Every structure is written in C-alpha cells, then in structure tokens.
Amino acid sequence: QALPPGDKRFDVVPKAFARKGVFWWRAVQMAWMLRLNNATAAEVDLEGYKRELGFKHPIIGVHVRHGDGCLHGRRKQHGCKPLQSYIDEIRTLRDLYGGVNTVFIATDSSTVLADTKQFEPEFKFIYLDMDRAKYNTKDKIESQMSSGKGFDSHDVMISSLRDMLLLGESDYLVTHQASTMSRIALQLAMLRLKHVP
Image (cartoon, rainbow, N blue to C red):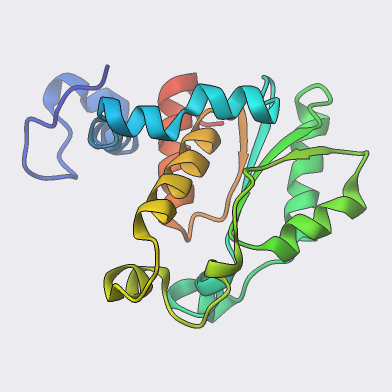
C-alpha cells in the first residue's frame, strides 16, 4: 500500500527513498491519490470487467487517444498517430516477450476500434464496451464536463478510471505519454511490476 506524501512538494523525494528516484516517488503519490473508496471500487468493478473481457496475463496495454485530444494541446501540434503506428510497437513487444498477442486497447475512438479488425487474428483485441461518440467533438472533454449541458461527467470518470486501471494492470504498454492517462497508467504498472513495462 502506498503511503501518503509527507512533503507538500510533488518533486521532492524523501531521503529514505532517494535512491528510487522522482519517477518512482511520483508513481507512489499517484497511486495513493487514486485509492478508490468502497463505493467507487464497486462501481468500477475492475475484477468483474477483467473476467468479462477475458483480461489475462500476459497482456499488452495500448492507449490510443484521438477525439478531442487531437485538437488541443501537444497532440494538436503533432497530430494523432494512426493505429498502424501502435501496431508496429505492439509487434515489437510481442516479438521481444514471447509471443504475447492479447491487447487491451483503451481509446476514445470507435474508428480505432474498427481498424483493429484488419489486425485480427494476428492479435486478439479486447476493450471496454462504451459509447465513444461523446469523445468525437471539437470541445475538450474537460470543458464539456464542467458545462453541465447534459454531458454525463460521472460516466466519463468511471469509464476513464476503468481504462486507466486496466492499462495499469497490463504487463507491457504502448502509450504516447502526451496524455495524463498514459502517464498514470505507466506509473501504476511500474509500481505493480517493480520495473518499467
């Protein structure tokens, strides 16, 4: 169990853990902040979703953010990569780590999910069943959530938690690190595995 941060600064590693470094310390802090209360844990139902999806180890986790992420911030400058770019990385992991071919894909794009069909049966793709149309917008999700205009913020948060936690449960990761979800998933996976996946 991660301990609460003893220092108010996010980038200061306590002397007792200095050899583990700032990445590890930030991951510990993030895991501590992401502890789910009983009600949220029951609603997220991570174990139930893992059973339903057939989420079994070893597994490669992939985060492909398109939707509003392609129109704002760093992603706007560089554009969003097509699924093929991620497939090249998935193949590398498969070849390096003994033929792992089950891929959990966390994405806000129904187009990306449709594109996975061209890579089956080479890979078995699993993903959460949810309505992704709400992410296909010119407005940032954060803006929609705060607008109160019929956007179900609670549903978005629960779906995002499920995706992020399942990515964190993956043995190997392909992410883009321009997204907070990708960065947190990497931190959670590193703490669980005790090495960078």
